[in-house]
Amino acid sequence: MSSPEALILRELIAGEPGWVSGTALASRLEMSRVAVWHHMEKLRAQGFAFEAKRAKGYRLAGRPAGLHAALIELQLKVRPRGFSLVVLDEVDSTNDEAARELAAGRPAPFAVLARRQTRGRGRFGRAWHSAENGNLYASFAFRPRVAPERMQTFTLWMGVNVCELIVNFTHLTPGLKWPNDLVFDGRKAGGMLTEARVDSDQIRDLVFGLGINVNSPPSGWPADLARRAVSLGELAGAPWDLNRLTAALIGRVLLAYGSFAEGEHAATFADLWHRFDVLRGRRATVLEAGERHTGVVTGIDGEGALLLREDGGRTRRFRAGEVTLEK
Ligand code: BTN
Image 1 (cartoon, rainbow, N blue to C red):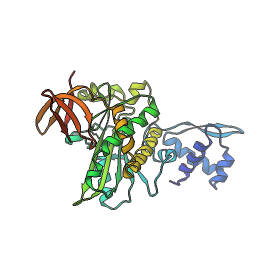
Image 2: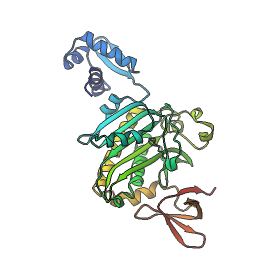
Image 3: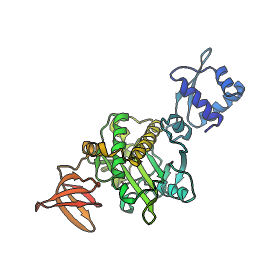
Image 4: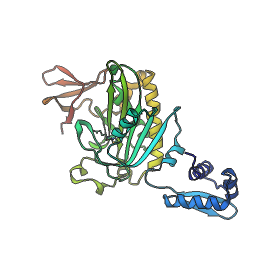
């Protein structure tokens, strides 16, 4: 990330909310002021706007609404050694692209983001609506090298971290619907899809996929989703800065992975889950392996399995399944 454009952005962001003089920019970048101006034109074409004032210099007056690799990188506050970021215009699925990159030997951790997906996937092989609409489609690749049992609560742990980050960033409070939905009042604002390749007794690699409805307008959903989906922008009444939110999310996911890998999550996980859990105490039906079980959700156990007290009084645990809340 050392193109002249990225360097100009770095200087202007570092100088915010102040101005950066054209002479200072030119000398720091070791180029002429005409060359600086030329690179700023390129940035304008990417959606940036600059204010220019005689005797003061320049400052950023507008940023692109869509994903911008350099802008995300510049705003990353957490960056483990060797981390890399891939930002694509279009891909079949960021999870699939991350898996291909892992198979090709790309050093982990890394993240793959795309402006749109042509075959975005959710749980149970369902399609994940992935138009270029200001939403986030992201996958994070890791090589944990641990026994698969160690990862049982991984998606749930990521879920509580993503929720906390959303609370801190937007002051909106999402709920978690076990095991992988981010919801507001029953409407889905995000989903997670963790996929791992396992050797005989070890995880070879793992992809954590995250889709968040950040800025899609209410009118933008296909008819079948319109009632069930919501975006953070719709809830706030204004769009969010997608690149800043993405940088914050990347940082949080990387930190959360680190604490999970070290086993540090164990102390706070149950409390955090409880804080965001929208199922506990509610009557629900769990569909698992073609069978329906109805009762009251009492929470999750230490392995992340859902606990349902059935009407007969027996508590069943589910490692997988789909939950529907009773109205
Ligand atoms: C679900 O709710 O069923 C999970 C949805 C996960 C969607 C994300 S979008 C980025 C990543 N790439 C995919 O194909 N899926 C995940």
